[in-house]
Image (cartoon, rainbow, N blue to C red; front, side):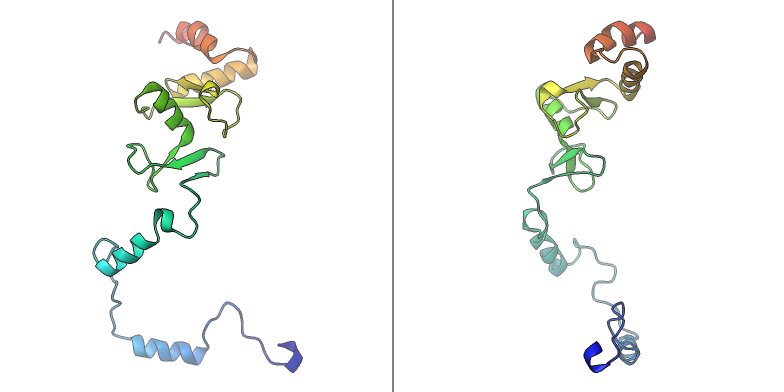
Length: 163
């Protein structure tokens, strides 16, 4: 408030020292009503939690998003390999739908055009493990940039490593 030469209160502090002291004195000896409770223990907390979760949440974006590594994820609360927030990577879901089974944690889904958001089935290839996926990228980088995933697995990986 420069106009009246009044001292501004620091934005970080919500209360004055006097108010904080008064709040502290009146709160001594009290146990918070929610101490030790989770949303499953107390019906009032559970009701509030359910009223703002999933589609009812203010920041709900349709059950999908893009993570920090550039992969699209989809909300699926019934998937056995979902993360703690009930999300699954979309490219894994597309591959699972085509195979009619869940993928193992060993299996790696590769994007042929290296566009992590292009999850159409023609752009995806399933490697049996991370070793074969890494070997493919190394072979492509150092020996043959035009080799396909299928040719690599048949001629080089299975032949060289005897899988």
